[in-house]
Amino acid sequence: MAHLVWDWNGTLLDDLTLVVAATNVSLAAIGGPSITADDHRRDFRRPIADYYDQVLGRSVSQDEFVQLDRVYHDFYRDGLLDCALAADAEDAMRSWPGTQSLLSMWFHEELVPEVTRRGLHAVFERVDGLRPDVIGGGHKAEHLVVHLDALGVAAADTVLIGDSADDAHAAAAVGAACVLYGGGFTHPDRLADAGVPVAATLVEAVSLARAAVSTRGAQALR
Image (cartoon, rainbow, N blue to C red; front, side):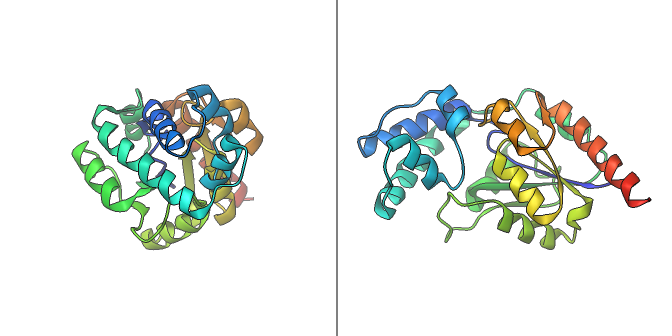
């Protein structure tokens, strides 16, 4: 059976409310406007600097981005204990018959203890987040390459489930399949433009991922 790579924030972890609150605190620190969850789901994108540019209506300097990133993560850490997994996250993980791993754009040294605290460490073959020397905000594709190499898993045998167009871009860049989850950081209407299946629930996402793997296997036999 193929390998499944999960996204964390906005996918397995239901943290949209906290993310919006943290974004508003960070924007306020440089005199920016406040946003709603609907605004975030409509406008969020990577690189995150481009998202801030759009919200502010101007380019964000490097110093401003560092400040935004620091204020955001300080607020986010304080609220993390109140965040639950997505309602069907555990059912979805149990429904996948193959191996699974986790690749997040959150900081690795914070991600691993959080996954462990929630009792999920045994589910995943590998858990990877951003290293301390990486300022967040870029694309996932290069990190997915490293993640799969470390696992020794071929991209052609991999399916990624995430909640952003960047997840679809990362999967396409390495030759993996992808299913997007419409209950996370991005409105499903925007996800539809990525050209991959979009699921309303994580259980449905796994079902679509299994179908995608079966289709790829059938095509490989032709």
